[in-house]
Length: 434
Ligand SMILES: *[C@@H]1O[C@H](CO)[C@@H](O)[C@H](O)[C@H]1NC(C)=O
Ligand SMILES: *[C@@H]1O[C@H](CO)[C@@H](O)[C@H](O)[C@H]1NC(C)=O
Ligand SMILES: *[C@@H]1O[C@H](CO)[C@@H](O)[C@H](O)[C@H]1NC(C)=O
Ligand SMILES: *[C@@H]1O[C@H](CO)[C@@H](O)[C@H](O)[C@H]1NC(C)=O
Ligand SMILES: *[C@@H]1O[C@H](CO)[C@@H](O)[C@H](O)[C@H]1NC(C)=O
Image (tube, rainbow, N blue to C red):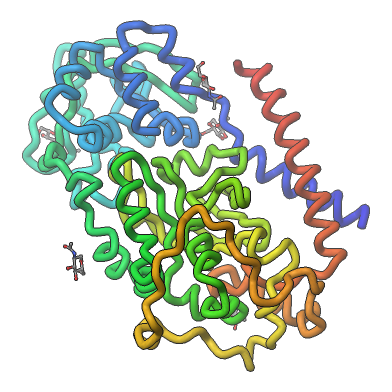
């Protein structure tokens, strides 16, 4: 165990070093009152988390007048898109701006990574103009260079550079407002994204209405795809009481806007829509590079794709059904007792319809315990073979695999050690750079 722990600690250390970031854009900009509006919008749109989670980034800032003019005319989702076009995923300082090969370059921006940017719309054109001027414009062909570099604000070479430009860079179509989140067709988007089973469940239980109401103020959905419900080992959801099913579905949502960048920088466990006096129903995040996993305590699920990121609504698909410990215990749920081969996949969404439509449960009702007690330890059939066979992250099985008692000890120790180590490292880096 000692050697294993050492190896795991070293791996954890490497993982930590690659995710630790030393810059804090909010702190950097707070020294400049002329950018307080820009800073304020970075926080509101959570772009600050995105910037802080990048190793190499250039932030093109605008003064308060320019930001206020933009924000007065457009909703927050548009402001976010425009600002994300001002975050270059490369490092440019004064020197590099004046040494661009052939005098002109396209840089990728944060807007490009949202998937909303067709063609070159997510790129920024940087051109070294005559007389020492540097022009900025959209990377879309035929765009003008309407913004100019005015001065360098702050650099931490070669991780973050903050440069001021005199006017916002506007890409074609970027000012078109997306649908108000209250009017977003959540079920339509989810069906298109391959989450028909989840849609069926939230519609039948009435949880959809809860989501729609929350969407106006802030909502993040983690919708398991259809494969996740079919994965071997997913408990038979038809055995859950209605209250428990409602809690399970609400467990797949946060009552706030949390885009991927924010999830990546989340270090404490998060309350979900299922959180109530009846149970904590919280969830934590594990990040390695661009890979974000949600940990329910029973198992983990990978964030598979972003379906929608439009402040204040965010919709993701996840690879596995998230099983809260409140319903399924720290130990595996009873369902996986069946071997993967003999376990029938839950009925596909179409087959769910003949069931009598269940009335929406009173949301404050405490969730009923699962049909069978979760405290029976791991089932004998879940030996090491089953574990290794089930270790493919993409097939959704990992979330309900049954670790042995000794696995739990290792996981527990690693978690404690890992958290301690992260803490020590973060202090170290704070002292070093802060
Ligand atoms: C960044 O700095 C701001 C202001 O100094 C502070 O409130 C915030 O907690 C910091 N964020 C992180 C992730 O350290
Ligand atoms: C700073 O940038 C260098 C080179 O791109 C990179 O190797 C390093 O990890 C970055 N440091 C931090 C703390 O992000
Ligand atoms: C940048 O824009 C200018 C002016 O429209 C154009 O001449 C130049 O080719 C563009 N640069 C790149 C790399 O696309
Ligand atoms: C939402 O989308 C679905 C599937 O595309 C469609 O059947 C449904 O009518 C839409 N609902 C609304 C309110 O537009
Ligand atoms: C796991 O993935 C490997 C390679 O992708 C595949 O050969 C194997 O069958 C998968 N195992 C399971 C249990 O899905």
